[in-house]
Length: 357
Image (tube, rainbow, N blue to C red):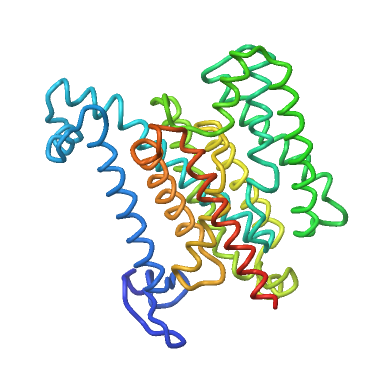
């Protein structure tokens, strides 16, 4: 067997980067355009993050930020950069990546651009779990994150059981998820309506989705989830293109359909749960990341990694806008993503209508 390497080849008129052995058993063919788009999204996320570290009530020059990150800054700069701003920047990157990857997984499994955690009820279920902890159990902090994760997992299990009938059809799963989401939205509204004013305000702020006040606890929570689950999803995500062609075709090509679906679905649920627990049910990032990455890569099915990088870039830009460019001062990032998401959803519906016509 030859030594693993990296080469550039032309397949079907498009250039691809081949990583692995020349025998083909361990090779991974990645379209060159996908690599370039991924690199561009990563650089965009890092550039916006650097700008966020320099911006605020106490502007810090880029050189001082870099020195602080390298452990060579003074005490005042270190406190501003590493204690106040860095946790928020990391939360933004990690939560965006988790939502982007989770949304891409579910959209690919359901073969539906609306099959994201936002629409199939997962983030709403996480919000229900968090509201129960906030309003009924009168807890905060880590308890809210645990409640959100438990609510997301319970909602995913409920939707699966309700949609299961000699297997789970993608359309039935999305439809059942939308119905469960509506019921949970009504439950959330009732919980807020029955709460005290101060509790209702705190709960509503959490429901909008925000990176304000997040610390290293939330960074560790979502960071561990991304570090563990994203590689698993990428490994099993090799079969997504084949699964999109139908179960029979995938089986004929040797794809372990049920195992791949189960692992990818569990990874997507856990990523959405961790992201929601860390920053609240931030709207539309999971919905938009995959399709936008697909349009940039010119691939009908965006890969999980481009979706994750697009999610990180979208949330980084949205968070900067929420802090510095929104009229009337800083607002929760969920407000910005909801506004941008409304525009995106309108475009998506118009585009689908024209495509069908």
